[in-house]
Image (cartoon, rainbow, N blue to C red):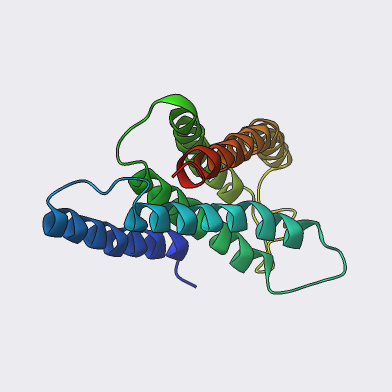
Length: 183
């Protein structure tokens, strides 16, 4: 396994998506609007990736019955979709950050930064290939400190993620109501 493979794959995906975006900008000679076909596609695909980030990894982590794949693979998937999805949503914004969409974008930026912090803390705790904690590699106190820090991080990261999705769903409902149905 390549260490940080999900980060490299996310960067590659961002470069490809960013190149397509730049191509559209050059072709149309304007920044794509959030409400046009390309902008909607970016927003929808990005949001679906973010929704997958939030739900699939959490379901796998909490499921005692279904063992679909290794936890380490699901964490990589969580990190990949948690980077690529927000990048697409950022491009969807047309670089306008006012109102509810601006608040949603702010939550998105905060949750991505928080995710990087959590990934760093998570890597300080030794784990097996399946993602379960391994005892004995670190001194007892260093391991306890890392676990406490990870628990504190969870108490911050998860509520911010929930706030992000509440604001995102409100944005989607408002956009569909005022823009799409209002036409």
